[in-house]
Structures are given as C-alpha cells and as structure tokens.
Length: 365
Ligand code: UD1
Ligand code: UDP
Image (tube, protein in one colour):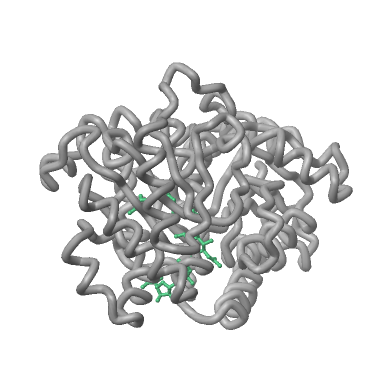
C-alpha cells in the first residue's frame, strides 16, 4: 500500500486537493493522510471548502495561523516534521506556491521522503514575490513535478530539472471546475441574494502582497475600481488581508460606499459569480484561469503573470496598477474588446489532470 501525506493550508490548495484527493482515494493500493497547516483558518477561507467540496476531514490540523514569513514557515516546518516522523509516508504531496507548500516540501526532503509537487514550473520571474521563492525552492527539492502547462515544462527545463521527473498533466483547477460546475449551478443562490443581473457587473478579487502592502498600488486599485463602478456594479469578495490594508490606509469606508464589498465566498458561490460576470478583475492566480474556463474576459492587476498562455490567447490583459486612471482605462477598454467564447483554445488539459497524477504516483510504488 502506497502511503501519501498531502500538505495543504491555504484557500487555493483546498480547491486543488478536492480534485486530486477524490481520485487518489479511489485508486487501489493508495492511502492518503491529509494534513492542514491552518495557514488559513477563518471558516470562509477554510472549512467552507471542506464541506462543500466533499474533502475528507484533515487527519492533522496544525493550528499554525498567521505570522511573518519566517515565523509562519518555521512553525510549519517543525510541526510537519513531527507528523512525517510518525507517519513515515512513501510520498509527500504539495500544491502550488504558498508557505505551506514550501514547508511541506522542505520538511519531507530533509527526511529523505520523496516529494511530489502539483502545479510545478510556474514562474513570474519576479523574486520579490514570496510565491516565486516558494515555487523555485519547492520545485528544486521535488522528485516528481506535475506541470500544468507547456510553459511550465519549459521553465523547468531551463532550470536544469531532469526531464524524467517532470510530467505535463494539465491543470487540477480545471478538473475542479468541470467536476463542481454542475453542483454550483444547482445549489448557489448568490446572484439572487446580491440581486445581480447576468453580465451586469464586474467581479474583482485582490489579495496579492505586492498590491495590498503598497499604499500607492492599493489606492490606485481602489480608486480605479470605484471609477468603473460609476458605469457597472463592481462586486468585491474581500480577502481579510485586503480588508485590513484598506482599513490601515483609512479608505475602507470611502470605498465601501461605491464598491459592493462582501465577505469571501465559498467555491460554489464564487463559480457562479465568475460565470455571470461581464468581466473579471483580479490579482489571483486561480481566478485568472477560472475566468477563462467560464469564457469571461479577465484583467489582471499585476506587472506579470505566470499564466502567460492566457495573455497570448487574448483572454487576459495585464494592467500594472500604477495609477487609478491606468486601472480604470484597462478595465473599461476590456469591457468593449472582449474576445468571443468560441475562440477559446484548449490550454489546461481535458479535466483529467488528477487521474494522470494518480497514475504517475502509482507507477512509483
Ligand atoms: C496566501 C499565500 C498566497 C495565496 C493566498 C491565497 C503565502 C506566502 N501566500 O496569502 O500565495 O495566493 O494565500 O488566498 O503563502 N488572515 C485572516 N484569516 C485567515 C488567514 C489570513 O484574517 O484565515 C489574514 C491575517 O491578517 C494574515 C493575512 O490575512 O496576516 C495574510 O495571510 P497569509 O496566509 O499569511 O497570506 P495570504 O495573503 O492569505
Ligand atoms: N475563491 C473563492 N472565494 C473567494 C475568492 C476566491 O472560493 O471569495 C476561490 C477561487 O474561485 C479560486 C481560488 O479561490 O478557486 C483562488 O484562490 P486565491 O485567489 O485565494 O489564491 P491564488 O490562486 O491567487 O493563489
């Protein structure tokens, strides 16, 4: 029996693990133990996903919560190591690019436990992003690297990662979107609750440190979105980091009056908000791809993106949030130059990435 310890901790990882754990646990000869670092701990950033995406309850909850990068990652390393020493798994499986990813990979590698990394090979080439450091280090201590795209494979090749370790499997977030799309349609009533017309609003999410922790960029984004809101409602499910940043800047109340700020929502509600939006504006990695899955154009408020194929295909437009005018102009332009849904290329596999991952892991038993 192959024993895998999966390490997750932050919102996007719950969506990815929902797609993969279901398949792993249905694979004969595989046993999974799920470890939640609790990097994210608010119910609407954590437990809601376990409930609605039918993720098995974690076998371990580490209670790490928030802190500076060093403190948070260090506490995780120590606690994950203790679990790994007890469980002695054959593999440790990590996802994406958060501090939980890095801690899981390093704890395992130091104990000589093989590491598999889902969503390997993504690069922004901006080392000031904490995620970029996490990705590079995780990839380079992984034994199996599951890349979502050809661009990710090429990045790993350039960095000298042995080709035999890298498999292009597609994107597990696409799997999740295919698998849970119907449930979202059947169960979510968020549009009715918020009284939103289909294609009658812009959906926005902001949480990236480079935007929330830089006063000039945060103000440019808030004012730019408020300018757009004079034409079309802007719905903004607010990450706690962004709420705190707006409050710190003393501009929360001002923008609460013009933007439809709501608490973070669950995946099923988010899916429905995305599907019916006229345009999505975000700095999230996952939301950039989901807008494409649903055929909704996207403006990304960043200087660069890891998901370069979406920009090349014309579905995503990069808008560095230097000034409020730049933000508003890009968004208003995108509202009028949206590509048609028929032109969507197939970029992320056919919704079977998790099955490929399970097969490759099984073959290493
Ligand atoms: C983390 C990831 C980021 C990912 C994002 C997904 C790192 C370095 N960053 O960013 O890559 O895109 O998750 O959402 O791992 N907070 C709460 N309640 C919670 C969790 C956080 O209030 O349940 C607040 C705390 O004030 C905390 C802040 O949000 O200090 C930031 O949380 P943290 O997990 O450190 O990073 P994120 O910005 O969420
Ligand atoms: N998401 C959600 N509710 C929200 C905002 C985002 O369910 O209020 C989902 C979103 O649909 C996507 C994932 O969270 O599946 C993306 O996570 P996030 O933006 O936090 O992180 P990133 O992808 O940037 O690492």
